[in-house]
Amino acid sequence: MHPAPSLILFTVLSGLGFGLMVWLGFGALVPLGWVGFVFWALAYGLAGGGLLAATFHLGHPERAWRALSQWRTSWLSREGVLSIVTFAVMAPHAAGSVFLDRPLPVLGALGGGLALLTVFSTAMIYAQLRSVPRWHHWTTPAVFMLAALAGGGLLAGQVAAAGPLFALLAVALALHWHMGDRRFAAGPDTAESATGLGRIGKVRLLAPPHTGRNYLLREMVHVVGRKHAARLRLIALAAGAVVPAVLLVALPAGHLLGALAVLLHLAGMLAARWLFFAEAEHVVGLYYGRR
Amino acid sequence: MTALPPPSAKKLGLVIDLDTCVGCHACVVSCKEWNSQSPLGAPLADLDAYGAAPEGTFLNRVHSFEVTREAGPPVVVHFPKSCLHCEDAPCVTVCPTGASYKRAEDGIVLVNEDICIGCGLCAWACPYGAREMDGAERVMKKCTLCVDRIYNETLPEPDRVPACVKSCPAGARHFGDLGDEDSAVSRLVAEREGFALMPDQGTKPVNRYLPPRPRDALPEFDVLAPYLEPVTEGAGGFLGWLDRTLGKI
View (cartoon, rainbow over the protein chains, first blue to last red):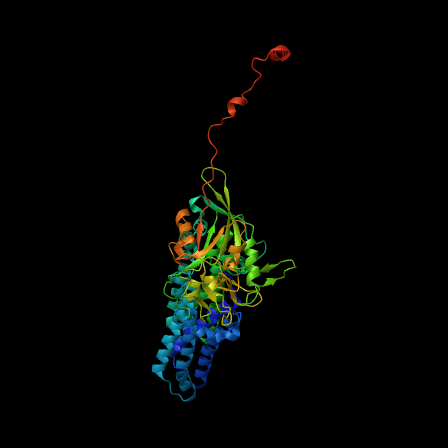
């Protein structure tokens, strides 16, 4: 699949922002006054910025509000609705903490739960697609939610909790890659089932329907840059999860160390999300003789 | 509303005969032509049409496959592919705006271009690559089963079929109600063992494909062979003498 920068930024940044909201909402950290302002601005800024980035992926961003209507069936719609509801429910808790020194823990906890659900629905936008076997797997929501919780915990300064969460994230990433590499081949879809010609023999594309590029190939048969996948996986795993975990567990906590861990995690997750898209093969590639 | 309607009794769709298709792409061109002048939606874009890398939006494309058999030479199969108007259409339920919908009355899957935000998720959800984002309009395009022809009473009766069916010079495309067991298309599917594409995706496509018929095999004996035996044995006269003499040298 085409690794669109807008979608990579969206999933990484809003995941991190909603992850921070989970920790702030459930009261693991109740920052008041100016400190509170910084934390809440970071959470709203990351989550909102990510959502804004996602609208750049749309052909008609001016109609984005229409995406809130089909929450009964569509995970993308649910994600939009949940993020707005989360923002709204969280707002009194955030404003109370920052301006009145009066946090509202009940609304906070409700908002925290909604923030976690928002991240889950983001992951389900991808995990629901049976046409992309690598995504259609439980490791997709696992990676998204652990990344949000670990990254958010790190931003919230929850060193003791974030360390083990990073370790879990590393395991989830490794599992997502390991199992994902086998999903397409293990699945039932082949060029023979795609064309129904398997009853005659082995199927091979002789002539594509067009000599040039098209939307389908650009969007769903993206094979550029996969040769660096193994190296990028190592970078993503190390920077995104392993090194932050080791830093948090082994070294004394501090703002400088925290900032370093955040930047490493962010870089690692951007690489991991690039791979998430670039390595995902769509079954339509079977009609084009490539994946 | 992107919830799927209950399965309709009427299931309009296409039956494509892979035995007959000659791969001429007439259906591709006529589809593009009809849907570029239809009031149903924006024209199908052509980008860089006269440049180095031309590309365009198509609702129907013809692939050509080579099928290697266990015995006999490989077979070439031309394979037109467009929207299969699935009963469990994943492209419809993922749509966040309600632009994508399946008609309750005849099962046709359509896009309301006026409320499509161009997110592309429906194209991702379709395993068949039946949807393409228009390069100019930035909204999703797909086969409408020529809904503006098949019910169009201003057209003469024989023209009330999808443009691709009308234009096929080989008669490889058939249009009809696959929900009706007695319809011509349903009988064709039953007779020729028509099949659905990628059944494991669980989409329950309405369109069916008819497999290529078995090829004729050459008979194993050859009636002419006895007449083609070498005839130089026992030649007489000058040629016989020459043959014998040369053989001795």
